[in-house]
Length: 286
Length: 286
Image (cartoon, rainbow over all chains, first blue to last red; front, side):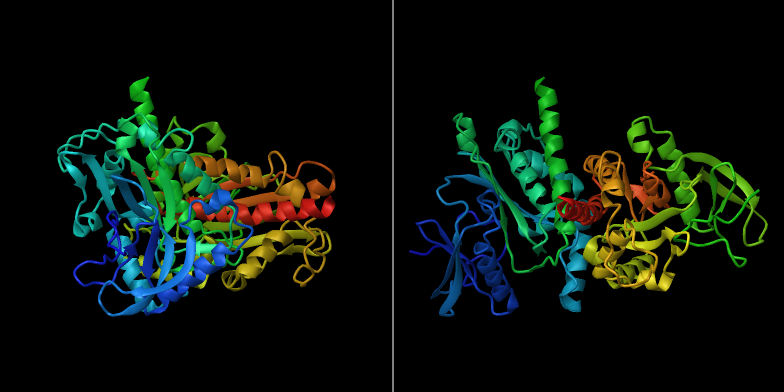
């Protein structure tokens, strides 16, 4: 009944006797509660967030639905363990292209331990977080029947530069991926279908931005934006199924009446990268 | 001909034999070029910025006009020294209320020395910068003939908390200041005249925000937003003369195609504080 997710791109994986999330065939994603306070903090966030009447469905749709906690056998064979039961955000998709982007130039926060602060600060400086206000944490891009998925290794992703990030965000919506790790300039054929248009990724990110300009309830430290779509749907002339979800809430803190300027700044930076791609593509077609 | 500025609220002051800026009675502000690379960096910024045709007058008006470099006797008696010749942004104002707000949750930047990074990081954590995305660097608020100006000491300003910042931003547009350091709740009588309306501070900040969402030329590390207006004009039923200026460009770096997400995030946070005051006031009047 439970199995290792097919389309996870970042975070701990439930393989080789390790602890990681599981999915079922009904659309649920089971995330093991970690022993340290990360598990309890993420549970507290989901519990609070899902019961707040002021969160409209308009915003709620950007978060995985929360179905409570369920104890099941952990993937590492350590026995029964409580898991968060969440919506599996790629459920029902055949060959989704997925990119996980950790938002914020700063992944640490004042309440954290000095040790945690220093580790995060080091990583923020070593990756693109400090420079771009976000970093890519993982991705898989579907190239087609023949080439399958391009899923660079964790180490490769962690060493992405500004140029790599720009390249990946173009490649994510490109057609010429039969030799997926080649240096061919991505054609961005799907940019307008996936990033652009009503309901496209850009318009979803802009809706999120509007919310972040105003909401002062939560600071989403170290959260990710997940962007998903299906290339085959686009090729069939159907809707791309482009979807934006926020995930990973183990480090969310109270906003105390202040907007999450760190998340908002990084989100605006990502929006600028994506709108540049949409604008460049439109120029080519006109 | 040269004199110490009457309305400087932050930075080094040209008093007691110290090096600081001077003004003349024609509307110029003379900022001494510091010996380290701060002076040359600020000069390089003004030189480049003032010659860029892509900066529209719409945006240029938020920056002091640059009139070149002039050598004059330094205020500390050390002899001739080159000074940046800038527009005196409070020239012609009789009793301006002024607040200097350093924008950004991070005042350091990757290219700086480790020593500078550590000093800035410490100060960002000790002040409201990290939490709010900005900190108040200095202020003077005109209370009236009898009370004169309220200008808290540097040490007091440096220890401002979230609550103090909220209080000061309300007090800045309040009438009940005859006992200016009292704990009386500020009445925000001038909120709609100064912060609100067409041409008010909020609408100016929103124009700046729109520019920061798109411009990738400069990163304005450690820059300040100066907000100025004249209480007496408002009381006479004239325009408030509300004006927003960006100042202090000694740490500006190249944007390299990336937006200044650190400045933008902090600016959005300030905008939220100010729009909350405007909205609260409108609620009271309706």
